Length: 229
Image (cartoon, rainbow, N blue to C red; front, side, top):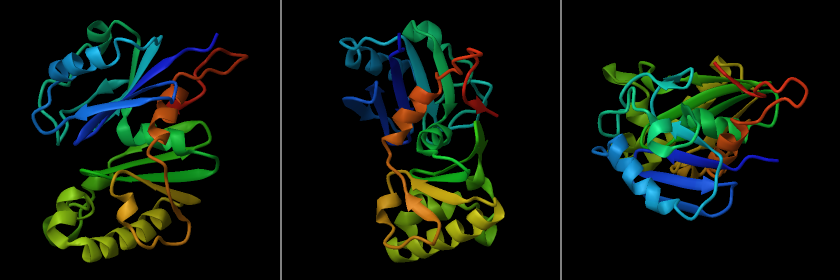
């Protein structure tokens, strides 16, 4: 019998919820959202849903299913929080960009970049997902690349200049990471009028497919099909 997975996609602006890739529900997040406040909002929203396990995409480095540092764009208290106890179901946590990358993957060597509040990034090859933090790479004038490609950069630079910076970064990152193709996701991907060769717009609903894939197993070995490094 196939498991029903509740997928929680946590972003700097919204928290989105879906079971089995059907109806989506959401609520606002923001710089003051704590895990306890999030759980309090999730419970009534999913009270009429049946699910067996939970996948959580989180906007901060995650290693071996554990949140490694407090997120830049949310409140405090996330590191070490017991989500399994709070939600009463098995929980697997993955970086939010990695979750969308996993759902977007269709073979070969794929780089995923997410244009949202910040810059999400991940590389997928075969059955391996490599979370990245490309947004922290040094960029112009002592800044990092996320300062230009994220939401604050869009507001500061204006759409045309921001588009040029994104275009340039897409070309360079695809080349540097030897990607066969790049999937561009996140809420601001739709603001790009043109994309370089080998770059395509993703579907943000793929985050929910990625959350479902996180629980897939190999039928013969019963081991996880996907390996998050």
